[in-house]
Length: 337
Image: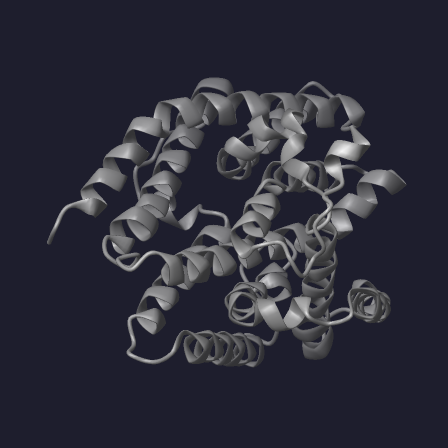
């Protein structure tokens, strides 16, 4: 098995399409790690293993934003009519999937927890912050990449816009944000424009001396870990968190360039439903937590096992049920305007 995983090609010779496929193959594992990290947040006293996963959750989110920016930029270069139908195939699809997730959440909580169903603004207001941010990035990408300038300049422009907006938000809101721990929006946002930049500069990156570059990335990552202790400052929350996420992502890229993870069939299913795992985890987390609390049960390893199993099951079911909708939107996006 190990010999099959190690690819004989060097990091400089692997093509971008293959590298992108390999990186996308990790989405399922990272989605499950995010679920475990969210489980750990509910522990009265977190065990070291889960605490480590919890503290590194933002790196997994950085990974998803990075992949989005990179994949969008890559597909834009390879597919001449990529922006045609973009609003339907990307933006509208994400919006509808988020709405459906909220509806499913309300009905499940009504049945299991006897909560009242209310079709009001909470259908939109109750989304996880990640959905709002991804919608913003999609719209920004469409706007910038519709401009008649070179793709390299487009990636620079997106980077400048995101950085400026992030900085303005930080100082305008004094580092506060309407979320559980008040700052997750700042920790990973720069990964999306970095994904766009990565596509533009991938050849240059892989012509660097791999061992030296990875050593530098490790040193920077260790230094950036101070952001896990120093909290509440612009440099820590906006700069160091994003730098740490980006450095870890680059290290993974160099590793994946030599290791063909697509040979590991066991994670293929999780990757296929990774979007649903992320979307529907919050329903399961809330419902199981409420049941445990009402029964006076301690939130421990059993809680994690139940949440993981039910999230995977619910995600798998919703993936099947929503497949016709996604195919329909894809066909509509192909239709001439």
